[in-house]
Structures are given as structure tokens and as C-alpha cells.
Image 1 (cartoon, rainbow, N blue to C red):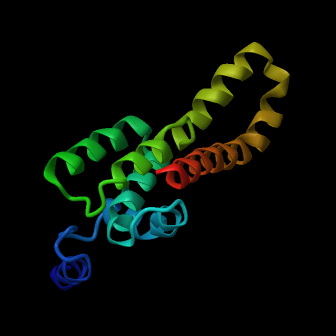
Image 2: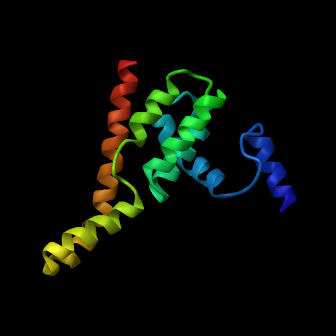
Length: 140
């Protein structure tokens, strides 16, 4: 495992020191960060924040964004602004449970329909957040 951790540290210039969830989220969501207009040097960090927002929630991502901003980890001063717009929204896995559980208590017969549409709604919410970030990027 040490060899893998050394490799991760080497390819990220020390930003990530071990092979963990944060690293996987960063690598898998880096293309999304690049598409919304984040400077390439900051894409791995913003990708990590986007992955955390998807799997955990936006509050944890915002706390980590604040830590990165305070430590001066971003190369481009526009990156925290773009990330703020990209993270803003209710598009995460926990929201699926909240929506299906909350709405199905009102109308129990619609629960199967809600379950079918849950991931489509999640995808739509993510696209909406990313589109907002793209618009903010074009204005900055």
C-alpha cells in the first residue's frame, strides 16, 4: 500500500498523500470541474469537492472549500467562486432518500414512480448546478 500512496502523492504534487475516497472523488470528477471552467491546476481539488458533494452532502464540501481557500491551495482566484456555484444545490445521494421518503409519505402509491425517477432527478440537479457554475464562469 505504501507504493500506491507514494504514487498518489507524486502525481498530485503532494496535495493527496494517500489513496482514499478524496483522491478517487478528485480523479473521477476532475473532468466535470474542467468543463465548468475551473483552471486546470485546481481541477483535482474542485473534483474532490464535487465528488464529496455527490456522495456526502454540500455542507461538508463547503467546509472543505473554506479550508482550501484559507490555506491558499487554489492557483486561480476565480476557482473558489466557481466552486461555490457548482456546489450549491440539493443534488446528492442523501437527497434521493429525503425526496423519496418525504414525498412517498404524502402519496404511498407513487413510491415506485419516485424510485424510478430518483437518479434522473439527481442527474438533472447536478446538471443545473454545473450550468449555473458555467454561467458564473462566463461572467467572471
